[in-house]
Image 1 (cartoon, helix red, strand yellow):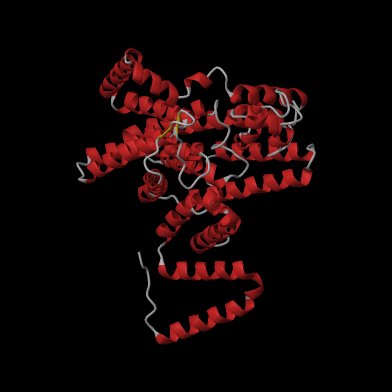
Image 2: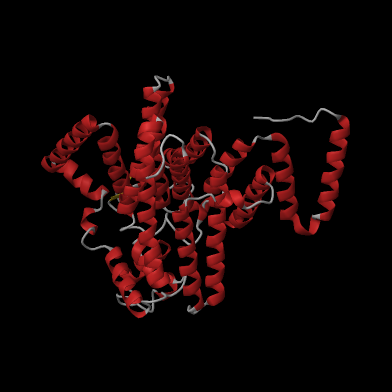
Length: 467
């Protein structure tokens, strides 16, 4: 991990003098001075792969809701760290940034164009252009991460970084549970408590787990086939993450993980899929037959709120916004500003309060969200996202099957993640392209970057040429 040690007293004196000078010069710009110090120390002490892994973890942990007041500063530091790493590896050449498959470049271009066009016709051009720039910065971050992927170790390093974040959030959730006295059920509200750890929203933890749990299943199968002693450790981690998912009580994410698991078993272990479905059927019958299980199952999944759900009112509002802003939408990140303009319930009512409280989830449907904010082009970019994702992932999966078994397991997990998130996208708007929201979107786009790498690697391989 430590790549170099300062042995010479002369080196120590020179670096100390440089840091002292930097401290004086940067005093009016304290955060830039801290940034320079962190970068210098990091470059001297740590290998590149550890810095990349650390940046992913910090993006998803240290810039989460518990450090909201420092989020922007931390993001700037981490972005500059990535830029310095890129320059150190590739110099000032931008060639490595644009090695994404052309389909993804088209998707990113369509997304940014839709945001820019919508911004021009919005009621707040400056704010919308700022959001568009924020989305551009997010895509640059993704490009940089992609440029460093050149072997299986880097792929696994990225995936393990996401898993580490999930473990950290899970441990914090368990700490919260035990510190509050194991209060899993609230008799006052007659409902199960939802836990989110460092995040303010359980759905944010759920989306991360919707990505990492399928990855954990794939890694568990890889370790099992390699007869590694680590397989039991991976099984334990998988069980831990499944428990954490249940503790979040995020129904959309639980549904996404279920879809992913069914797909993985169908692709890799069809014999186990039969047992899995039979077990679920038996459990369902047991819940139906046993009254107490039926009661708590209904409470956990909030069955009584399926027909009377705030989402339906938000969807009604979304359709009204789309009807009046069909071509270009209301503008990036302006959906929430139109809530009271198109409110479908009585002003001041409990339902109105619920809609306002849920405003961070936008339209609670990814396609309606993009359509309402960016118009026709926004809807096109939302659809094109999944078209491209499945084109690349299924192609990579098919080619990996005859080239590399480990990559085949990972490719199947990637395809399953896309299917799970597609199902989730009809109930939640965030976690795919959320106007540059790093904490929400980075897990999915790390998977997109890995998919792009696998696709290009196999297509460019001398073993198999694209027909």
